[in-house]
Image (cartoon, rainbow over all chains, first blue to last red; front, side, top):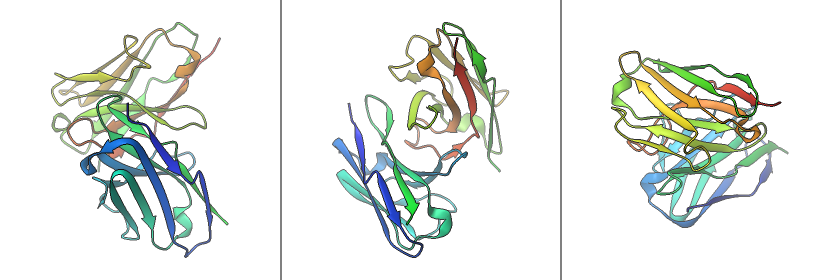
Length: 109
Length: 119
């Protein structure tokens, strides 16, 4: 079973700052099988990044994904006010077929 | 515009059943695998079931295996989740999402429907 952990649990930053979010897997994950989502209160998650580094349609280029194997990173180059939210990583594997990390809260400092 | 609209949520007693539905529009439904993802109040995300294009392949998370049944009607562009033997641990928002083992991620999400299991 592949388990995802995310760090930090909470990231306190100011608008304009750079955010670096980590997602670590207990086993190697193919780059094709790693995605990132953003969720704001009261709304469903929104796909940001798929295949570890490909931006989904309509996602600004300040969002970027990188990494391989067991360590993946979501970077927001310059935080905009609308970027303060919870971010989840997700992997596709064998069992469970899909799993999500516990999330990182990006809050306004 | 892709739209996924869930219905069928509500309050149910432990041991009861509920059937969720999801109407899809804005894309060719039978070209896409579909899944259900749930989120308990204040909790994280849990994928619970997926179904392939022609309903020939279905999978379930261990937490719902044997109790939930996913199905789809490609003629009606609809996805369903029959939930049986419900427990308090099944209380959550249930999201209909586009994606399964055909693309490995979920690119469109419905607004969710709340299922509350309580005596």
